[in-house]
Amino acid sequence: MELPGEFDVSVRSIPIAPVPEGIGQSFWEDAPAAELMEVPSGSDPSLEFRKTLGMFATGVTVITTQVGEQVHGMTANAFMSVSLRPPLILISVDRRARMNALLREGVRFGVSVLEEKQTALSDRFAGRVRAEDALEPVFELVRETPLVQGALANLVARVVRSYWGGDHSLFLGQAEYVRYGGGTPLLFHGGRYERVVRDPRVFANLPEELLQPILARGVERTYADGEPLMRIGEPGDTMSLVLEGTVHVQRPGRSVKLGPGELVGEIEVLAPGGGRIADITAEGPVRCLEITRNDLLAALEAKPGAAVALIDVLASRFRETA
Ligand SMILES: Cc1cc2nc3c(=O)[nH]c(=O)nc-3n(C[C@H](O)[C@H](O)[C@H](O)COP(=O)(O)O)c2cc1C
Image 1 (tube, rainbow, N blue to C red):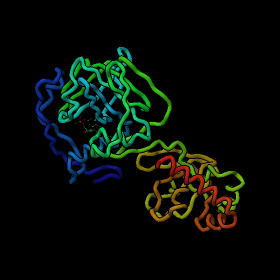
Image 2 (cartoon, protein in one colour):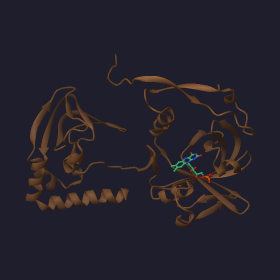
Image 3 (spheres, rainbow, N blue to C red):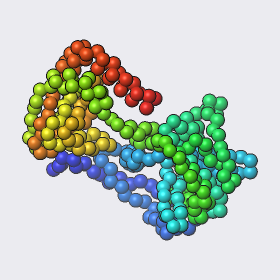
Image 4 (cartoon, rainbow, N blue to C red):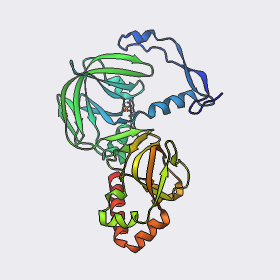
């Protein structure tokens, strides 16, 4: 029997590449030649593995090193902190990448943590743009190591160990230089760039005197524990202000609990065509004020100042993500 939330799982094998020569020693080299990995039936194991890993949101870095006069950079999100004492970090580099041939024990490399406006630099060092179209990066040399200027943080590390990592090599680096500044990081999730959105609310940003006439048109509704207020995909032509109790908002990659004074469904009521983007369920008894799209539009017509303020809020959202 298939229970809700359970997947039909079948076992498929994923071939594991043979241990390459010349990569540092580690007990992982004793890894078995083939491993079994369970994936939902019918799906391609490699793709499923890739997509599953892609759910782990990361920042984006550019790894740099200098060989003679030549600077080489490579975009990488497989970067992690390892140890505070001694200060160690780890990067994972594709064996086919040119960077892989440049790094070995004793070699210094730079890590520049990109800030949200540096997507073009990320694309450039991922080989995603033609050389002639590429943005020219500005490097600063620290300990003979190029670092990307304008990054959120920079580190210089020296490779102290390298390990076999299947089709990647793992380079453990001891940090020799670190610095960070203010700003917002560029994120990578689900195979694409993402931005940190600090405040997802829309109507809550309206001045009180413009919000009140909209809420005044609302109709009170109550929900019992576990009762859904909204379900993903359903038509989204209402929004609700929580007056009492707690609601649980769940959508892919986001799960939050909201209480009195919070609005739910405000994106969908503005753009109802795509349906609800979240499942919202009452946690215990909940009392809400429900405002329909028709009431909202009537309120905006009656008070055009509210419509203008709403446009300002939405435009600043676009600016954040443009
Ligand atoms: C966001 C992002 C993250 C990436 N992370 C890695 C990584 O962690 N390790 C890696 O080997 N390649 C990674 N890549 C791919 C490399 O940047 C790409 O293969 C690059 O062209 C290799 O450069 P090179 O061969 O000139 O050294 C990433 C690409 C992108 C766009």
